[in-house]
Image 1 (tube, rainbow, N blue to C red):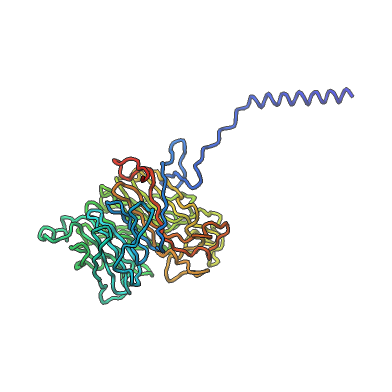
Image 2 (tube, rainbow, N blue to C red; image 1 turned 180 degrees about the horizontal axis):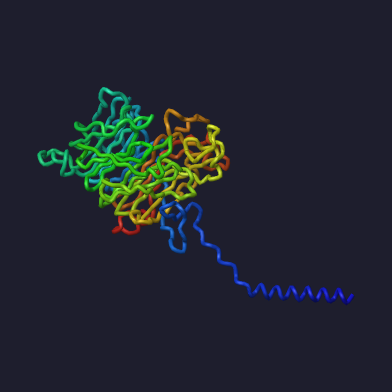
Length: 492
């Protein structure tokens, strides 16, 4: 009996001493702070940065449903604040910050068109509506009164068929090449207007002297590039008049002109990350001092960038990753810039990392290519900001903007190679769009492929994700891409 009492006493003493030792041990380290789901702060390698050093930007976005089908959308904002959005043959306008939309187009509303493109000339406020009618003819219409009245002309592609992937842009006249014509003509339009398209033999670009009414000079600027022909990104023009076009090639490439399209040069970059195949457009943005930013989808299906600080003459060869590492699959990137280093990028992306190496829709291990994504992969809309994109180590702030998927399953990236599972997965077509207004506020146009039950259901399938509803997100509050504007507030 005494032995039992002694044993119990020893155990009690041990327990009390253990408590003392525990009290003397250092407390556990505090948990590392974390960002809310869907918010990322990353460096030039796509890896997360410490929250002890960097805080998220105060970004909020506002959604607007355009109310019409609108795959391959483009967007522009006039100085009046009216938003314009292409919904196939319809030009939609909202002058109340996306509360309501109205159909403004009176030229194409009774025609069957394809490959629509919309452009707002920021120097003149002219709104352009470009539509392909058949394979040989493109109609270019324009309005100088916020879309109330329109004029337009047809433009034939010549004896070689297929006038495809049409794009239009505008920018300043230069002191060289075609820009010299301005010295001898009183009728020349205030800006140079460029019209580009592809045929089977490559990319053709033309320059207009009369504001887009006619295109009399130009020709082939880049030869045959892929099995899909001379597909290319948007036409981008810098404040110094340099104009850029991006062909679809395995090594990221730009072609540019410093004489308003009289001559063109070519530069390559991004050999360290390449591009996937099938792939979609790369894009270029230029800032207020004519620095250029070229973005594309790399071979690992992240979004990458190369920068030029001398108007396109040279480009850095070590690529910068803009998208977070957690976003393992991306497509449809687009970019715009304000002041130097202040850029915004949008893209569709997926964080379904567990699907990597599962069987894709062809039965092969999936590597992140959206064209082959398995049925359990969901794509969302992302917007990435940087306010120091020219720094050696820029910081990128990314927001997963859409609360529900934009697409479930694969996204067809080659029109001749789609997987028609439960309706064509070509529903989103080729691209989205991003532009800023004169205050530096960001606007994104995209087609939503997962709406209604697809958006609200917990077990949505690719067959449920075949919509193409025209949609817009724009910055409600947050930093302007123009430094002098500061922080933007929501519209009243």
